[in-house]
Structure formats: structure tokens, C-alpha cells
Image 1 (cartoon, rainbow, N blue to C red):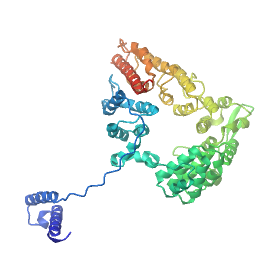
Image 2 (cartoon, helix red, strand yellow; image 1 turned 180 degrees about the vertical axis):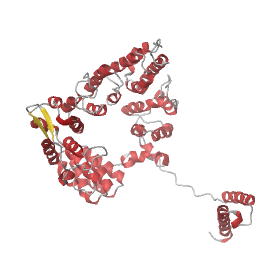
Image 3 (cartoon, rainbow, N blue to C red; image 1 turned 30 degrees about the vertical axis):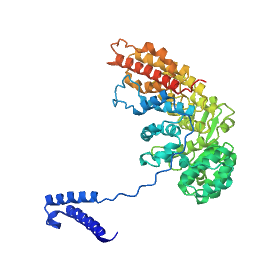
Image 4 (cartoon, helix red, strand yellow; image 1 turned 45 degrees about the vertical axis):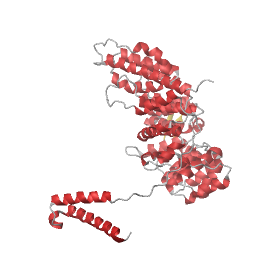
Length: 532
């Protein structure tokens, strides 16, 4: 820009800069203007600056979003989604009220809508993305339901950029596994998210081809990228991956080495699993005279152990020897223990006494191994009978460990086990166990939860301690249970030793539970495809 206009613009910018400097330094040091005059001049300059802005050239409009071929929602389901997205639950931390919390039902609604393959109403996508932005547990279901238009919107609004991070490849069309040239081009030149998505897609189709693809560029990848790529090998992990993973044990990155060791320990026939088993079995023996398990933990962590993934330095409060022992045992194939301990079954091994207070450490390591190897037999043994007096179980050191062991069991068996546990121990010990049961809860589990809540109400228990279980029941009970719960919605007469106000709370809580189950049934029916 030249001429008078350029001079005027430069002068105005200079005047504004002078005013800012004067304001920072003070009028007594910089200018003859009084403070009031300085403010007046700043107001004038502000108006000039705004009036002097020239309209910018119109931006190129974005390309249209990709078409969504899925069928639209039924009208009633569309209205329900609008209600779920606009619900604003109360903030009370004591009484939850009798009205259902609609936003808590959104994850289930999204799961059902995705199961039926519906497309979202475009006008509700902004509200859906806002909800997913604030709650990470909604993101997977919300982005699946939102489809390609979510990515289109996320590129236009930085508030929704989580959609680009959460979607591998961010909507990039991946080449088919058999399109070798296109695969190689995207692998060598693509963005990191595109490469992660490509590796996962190839791994699902041909695990060995995906590993070879990674091997070809492994030495040139950044450490943080190597870790992510290595983690993708969990899908389809097999014995043919062992040589590559053995090589990764010498990686420069400690996290990469640890992940490689973890993957190798999940291969029961790998050399690393064999080395860890030899070390672990040398530390544990059976005293046949007393039928007691005897433990002699390692006295050092040598370089070979560290190479195989053993972390030498224990966390604060843990002894070195017990820390090393636990890592050896949880990395050893569980199938090696019966031959070491006189051919006993997992149930018999767990029942054996362990000398010198090593029982907790040994059983906790067996628990971690059972979870990692998803061994059903060992998981059953370590869980023990749900009716046993010790709620912690014969092998688990906590209910958290027990919940992980339960995840290895088939769904029906898992629900039956937790139902029997609740009948024996009540609900106060069962909250974590309920969290790993498939929804909706199987009828025996649902009945056990409702019966335990009814017993707690009749006993005059403090009702607020069961609010978490009530919240789970609202989301996990079969909606058909609403009919059986009708009789529990009336207030009961409070006993003298009952918590003050308990009767009213229990009535309100059961009313809310029944209302929520009815609402879930209505949501399910609204999403059902029309009958042909």
C-alpha cells in the first residue's frame, strides 16, 4: 500500500502504539496528556481502528461433508435424542431426586442406535459433539453414531478437535490390504494417525503383513511412535511375532522394552516366557513333608532379568525381593506350575499354605498372570467360591483383583457368580464386581441386586451409601424388572434405629429406578426398526 492511505494507516498505528506505551509508563513520564485526556484519545483511536478495517476477501467455502448412507432415525427416537442432549441434571450431592438423569442414559441410547445402524439428525450433531467433548465415556459411541459429518465439523471448530484425535486416520480412506503400492505409500508418507489406522487395518486382515510393514521402518521411527505401533500388535498376537518382539527387548526406550516384554509373556511358548518361568519356578517349591509352598525370592535383579522386562527399582514402600518375585511369577506361563508342584490343579495349588507370609505376594502375582493370560481355570481357582466367608477370595488380594479375574469368565457364569456373592455378602462389597457384568444384567443377578436393596431398606440402613448401586441398577437392570419393582415404591414406616428420613429416600429411589427402567424400555422400542 502506498500514497496517502498508507501514510494515514501508518500514522494511526503509530499513534496507537504511542498511547499504549504512555499508558504503560505513566502520563507523568511519557506525555503532557492527563490521564483523562489519555483515555479520551484511546477511545477516539479505538473507533478509528475499527472503522478503518477493510473487509477481507471471502474465504473459500469448505467442501461438503461426505454423504451418510445410513437410514435416518425414526421421528420418536429423534425427539428422544433431543431430550437426552438438552437435559441438565441437578447438582445436589445428597438426594438424587425421583426424576431420571437423562444424560446418564445417553451411552445406552447411542449403543442401541449404533446397533441398528441409524444416521444422526444433522441439526443435533453440534449438541452431540458438545456432550462428547465434556465426557470421554461418550466419545466412542457418539463418534460412531455421528459418522463422517463429525469429522467434517471438527475440522471447522477447534472445540471438537477431540474427534480428529479419537478417530484413527481422521476419516482418511485407507487402501485395501491387497493394494500394496498404496499401502506402502501411505505407510511411508502418511500422517501418524493415518499410519496407526493403516497398521491396525492391515493387522486385522493379515497380522504377519502388518508386522513386516512395521519391521521395515522400525529403526527410523521415533520412540513414542514405536510404542504406539508396538501396542497395535496386541491384536492378532501370535508366535510368529516373537523374533520381532525379542529384537524390541533391546530398544533404546524403556517403555518400548517393557511393552515388548509384556507381549512376549502373553505368548506361553516364547523364549522369554520360558526364561521367566525358569526363574519363577526356581523361587517356589513344595515341601512335601508339610505340604507347604516355600518361597525363596530373588536376591538380585541382574542384567538378563532387566532385559526381559523386570523393573529393578521397586515403588515406594515395596521391598526389592518381593517386587522382583512378583514380576517373575506374573510373567511365567501358568501351565508350568502344576508340573513344578506335584501335578496339582490350580484349585489345589491355591488352597496350599504358603510359608513365611509369602502367600499374598504369590497369589497376587498369579492373579495378574491369570488376567494377562485370560486363563479361565486359574481365574476360577483364584476367585474361589462366592459364598466363602472371606470376601477377598482365596487368591485375590482385593475386590479390584477379583473384578479383573471375573472378566475372564463367560458372561452367564460371571453374572451367576456375582449374584451368589451378593446373596452371601450383600451389596457393600459388590460394587466393583457389578461393574464387570454385562448389561442388561442377567435375571439372577438383577433379582439378587433388587433383593439386597430391599433387605437394606427393611433393615433401616443408611440409604445414601447405596446410591452408587442404585445408579448402576438404573442403567443395568433389565427394563422388564420395572413391573416387579412397583411394590417397592411406597414409603415404609421407619423403625427407631433407622437413619432419619430413610423411608422417604428409599421410596424416592425406587420410584426413580422404576421410572428410569420404563424410560429405557420406551427408548428401546422407539429405536426398533419398523416391522415389515
